[in-house]
Image (tube, rainbow, N blue to C red; front, side, top):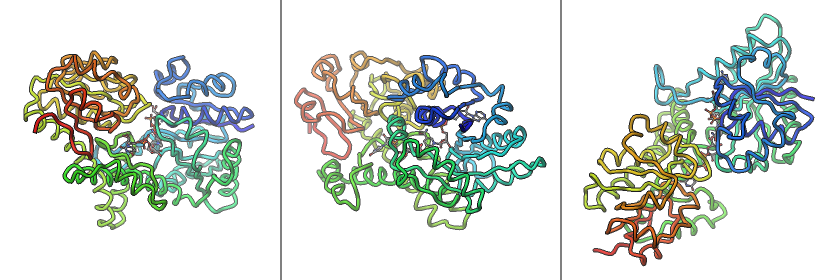
Length: 458
Ligand code: NAD
Ligand code: UGA
């Protein structure tokens, strides 16, 4: 039996440990977090995150070999464990050197120091958080200052799950990446973690590399994914000028097996807690390494994303006769993508803030992400309405903007909605999930992404 501890019970730590516990009943898994409310939620029927399939996995393992604990007993937990996953948040630094770009490693370093202080027996330490390349070196330096002769092996095992499909991604991953040192104890530690995943992941999908390749691959994977979205979004702007259709273009290029079909959905922009922060981190590392051209190249992926968000808002303003002041607008979706309650870096909230600048009268609608949206908006939350009912949101509105690709929004009765709205009625489909021709025939003026608008006036 292995004794596994995870520090950090967030979007990654909670689901990942739940899936490990489910598939490895022979091992004990404990998850600690300094956020007592989060731990209380993990121990309740109202889990702290909305993630399809998560509750079923939790129900199998919680109380059997999976336990969520506050960090009051962190000393005891660290000493108990022989494998420690560190899955704390690594946001963009907001102060000092590298502010706005470098990763803020304060939570991660605090964890390293806690491990150093409380461990009395050998441990494998696993970087689960996304970290700058060569962070494991710093981790090793901190841990190896111990005078008790305790052996620590630091392993990189970045997480590739996407929110909304986290359980599927963990149950059936494209690959698991494990990076370690090429020393006898480093290799042994890697083998221990390979064996852990091999309980349910086919061995050919478990990739082992050196530590630095593993750390860097995580940043690069996110940068490449975001780059594809920025690329297709850049072309969506050109489609709107040329009567080409972005979905036809995406299909045509995506059938080339060298390009592939995934991550070619043009949208109002990408969001989420990681793409922006990880690219900023990559840019910062490149600059620090004296590679300004490489840094500039990746920075443009973010610039294009901001352009796409602003282009969407500008299109709304221009289309609605250059005046949104006092006009009721329903925003469908606050989550950064469908099937999650997460609103971190959500393009929906960027659009919301910009429309507030235009003094529009906003009503925000989302099935699961309203509470997080309210928190993220801070003082501005007082200026908007919230509802889970799209029909209520649309009533009396001049426009609807689709900002999250929830399937619910594609299944509404838009004839009914049209009747209840102010006319002319506008729909801005920032996710291309609606039937645009049908909406046009109902009477809407329709503005998709990367397609010719369908409007009832010249
Ligand atoms: P999160 O903010 O949801 O969770 C992190 C948790 O760590 C928080 O609950 C926080 O209270 C806790 N924490 C921080 N310091 C602690 C300490 N010293 N002791 C105990 N608890 C502590 O973050 P997340 O979304 O789970 O992301 C975690 C890491 O995983 C990040 O590096 C992120 O880049 C990476 N990642 C995230 C995703 C994702 O989909 N969210 C996917 C892959 C990788
Ligand atoms: C992303 C990666 O997909 C994961 O592999 C990675 O582990 C994770 O970041 C992370 O490191 O945090 P996530 O942000 O949860 O996962 O979700 P994605 O499915 O990647 O979507 C990100 C954003 O891009 C969303 O706003 C989504 O709507 C948008 N998107 C995605 C598009 O606009 N078009 C697409 O074709 C795909």
